[in-house]
Image (tube, rainbow, N blue to C red; front, side):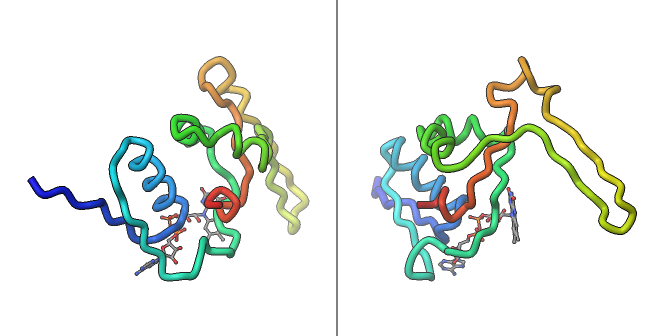
Length: 111
Ligand SMILES: Cc1cc2nc3c(=O)[nH]c(=O)nc-3n(C[C@H](O)[C@H](O)[C@H](O)COP(=O)(O)OP(=O)(O)OC[C@H]3O[C@@H](n4cnc5c(N)ncnc54)[C@H](O)[C@@H]3O)c2cc1C
């Protein structure tokens, strides 16, 4: 059988992590990006708790923790009414390996 590298279009977080996963599994891949490097516009910042085991499996979670920060409480405020809603992810304690979100701009995650 002829073997060809896997082609991945786009060096956004999905393409980069896909390429990393394939490479770590010994699968040759080619990543094609139309820009000259990893996009610099800050898009995703919050990486939800349910995605952290994936970053852990790829061996990059500790570096992400070093470069970003973890948070499990949040607030939304309506400036019109002054109403504030606060909540936490405490319900995940003992249920999820990482019961918090990671905050790291996707551009830094990509790098
Ligand atoms: C303002 C904003 C805030 C957001 N905040 C969050 C957040 O806090 N948390 C969260 O989880 N998500 C957030 N998102 C969503 C998140 O940014 C996307 O889900 C994520 O970027 C998708 O990743 P991706 O790799 O699929 O695509 P993209 O990040 O869009 O990357 C696609 C890449 O493909 C390249 N490309 C496109 N077409 C071609 C082509 N034809 N040839 C070669 N290269 C090509 C582009 O240049 C780009 O680098 C936010 C989005 C926006 C706009």
